[in-house]
Structure formats: C-alpha cells, structure tokens
Length: 296
Figure 1 (cartoon, rainbow, N blue to C red):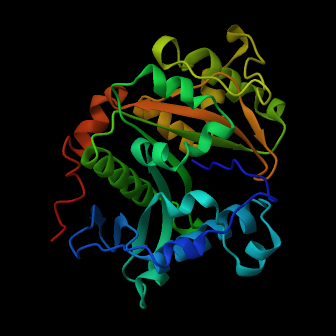
Figure 2: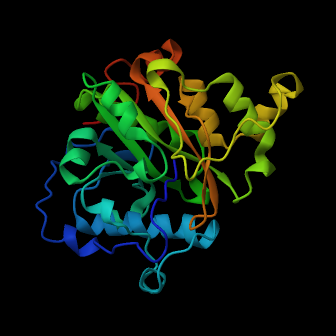
C-alpha cells in the first residue's frame, strides 16, 4: 500500500536517526524463501537506506511523486516514520554484492504500541483511524505502508514473499488487524468511478469496523448506483494490490482521499486477521510456514 501523508514541504529527513540505532538480527531471521528470493526485516541503517532508494525509483521516478529538493538530490523517499517502523524487504540473493544491492521490494510495518509511543499512526492524517482503534481496545493493530517492488520483480513470487513476511510478522507480534492506504493512480476520483463505487457498495467496512476519511478530505466513492456496476469490469479496473487485499478478506473505509504529493487517490484498507479467508491461511500456513520450510 502506498501511503503519503506529508506534503513535499513537510517531509522530515530522519535517515540519520537510524544510524546510531542498535539494530541486530541473527543470520536465521529470514521469514521466507522461494528460490533465489528471500524476505526478512532490514538489519541495519544501510539496508533501510537501500529500501528508501527502491521507494524513490518506484514512487518518484515511475509514479512522479513529489519530494523535497534534498531528497531529489539524494534519490531517496524518506519521512519521519522511517525511524520507528520495521522495514520488510525482499532480496534477490542471486545478485552479487552486499545485501543493500539485493533489495528489490519493501513494505513498511508499524505496530500499534510503537505508533502510540511515537505520536500516532501515519494514515491518521487522511483517515480517522483513531476512532477505529479505540473501538477495539482489546485488539492489536498494525499499519502497512510504502509497499513497492521494482518493475522487473513484479511477479506472483515476489508478492507471495511480501505476504509471507507480513503474515509471519503479524503472528510474531500477536496482531489482530492490519490497515493502510491502497492507492489508485491520479488525483481525479471520478476517473475511477467504477472501481470506487464497486468497493463502496460491496466491501465497505461497517459497524464495528467502520472507518471514514477525515471530513475535510473526504471524497465520495459512491459515484454509480449498484445496478449500474459490472462486477467483472470493476474487478479488472482495481489496482492489483487492492484486488489482492480484497481476496484476502479486506474491507475499505468510507470515502477516498486525494494525495496531491504522491498523485494518487487513496482508500483505507482494513483487514481483521479473523477475516482472512481459509484458503489463504491454508496456503501460507497458520504458522506462516508455507515458504519457511527451506530456511535453515
């Protein structure tokens, strides 16, 4: 999920904040492996920096997101949350060189306890996630963000490893629900009327899981009556990541938000662990062992 909550003038460069941070990980910290690809958390500041470089290639070079002049010069996508999040990586171990040279995909993970100590969730600048979290005081939430993969690695295998890592991490920390922004390209919601209306009518989060865009940012998703929606065409119009979340059992919040800095239209994805369909639990394993069997 791509999430951008700060405009280009308010991005805080905290990459150096990680330099003095003690980050140790054993050699057996790999969460999954398929052939030459493996997934694990970043082990040091250099790997986080390399992940930020991958994010720049995808979000700025490819998607034309706007970042500050210093970040443009350094070719990095950086913000203040990077210093407190865990950074999930996919690495191609067949690439010769240091691990930093092998990073081909990344996800950013923020647990509720960490967010509360550090000032809140990233997506709270777009959506009223505080009300959702407070309604479930007995549950542990995790925010997903900054999902990206280099173009040549956008395959089923890479996506499976990212989900293997997310699932293993969620189990490790007893996470009950995940959420984060899913993005449509462009800043004109009407260009996605079919897909947004389909999400609104079919998988909108309700009752205890209901969550809305912040009132001052709220853009309606209800642009077409349900009888006018062709489900097959609507599914084809969904970004692959949002479609993947939907297949897992995710819901979407009410209202979209236009992110001018990242040039996207965002919706909030909400995925209670209890909603994950049995076929996916069986596929990845209730203990996240699906792709961990070959890890030594």
